[in-house]
Amino acid sequence: MTDATTPRPSSGRKTGRWIAVIVVVVVLLAAAVVAAEFIARSVVTSTVRSLVVSNVGLPDDQDVDVQVAGLVLPQVIGGRLDEVAVASDDVTLGPITGDVRVDLRGVPVSAGSPAEGGTASVRLDQEQVRALLAELPDLPAGTIDVAAPDVTFETSLSLFGIGIPVGVAVTPGAAEGDLTLTPSSFQVAGNVLDADTLRGQFGGVADGILQTSRLCIADRLPAGLTLTSASVQGQDLVATFDIAGAIVSDPALQVDGTCG
Picture 1 (cartoon, rainbow, N blue to C red):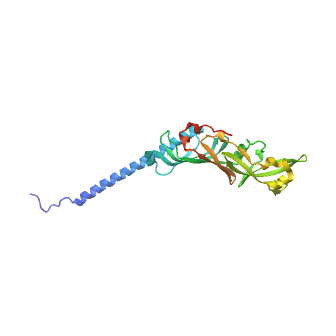
Picture 2: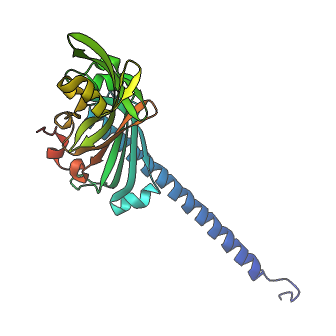
């Protein structure tokens, strides 16, 4: 005979046990999601780094930083990465060597599809600027100094058979994908002159340094890159490029472009 006074198991205890089980399951699921996100991010960043090293021709031990904005796993499942940033120092792109940052939007996870597009910036120090501008004829690159907002160099003009030292300040820019250097001021015997005054003193002899110089670099860079701006920031020259989204899938945009 059952003792009527014996307490029956409490339904509250059963509920408590179920809550504990649910909490454990949720914690395990959360840990699995965190682990999956960590693995996805690791695989994606490693893959992007490998592609950059192989496609750009960088040394295997090149320090390349890859950042993917937001949670990676949902983006991988959706087939596209919203924003990918790649940065590396002392990268050589054709005639340009400098610190590079690339920002791409809508990068496809699978091959064969274009990205939405992006931008790239290359930061060159004074020695790197000298090496680049040495390709301009008649520009004494060894005298170049870089200080915002201009690049300056020393040259000379002949007047009555006498060489007159002239300091030239030029403002960098971009036109139709070319790097441009537009004269902004001149210095003769410690005096700062504008273009009209210099022409008045030297006549046609000064024509060469009064004109905007252009340097085409398109034939030494992937066709999918277009120079859009150049400016002096501090003591560095910063060049900015637009990136065609199809460069990730179209071989024609990955080979060097053309000049002229």
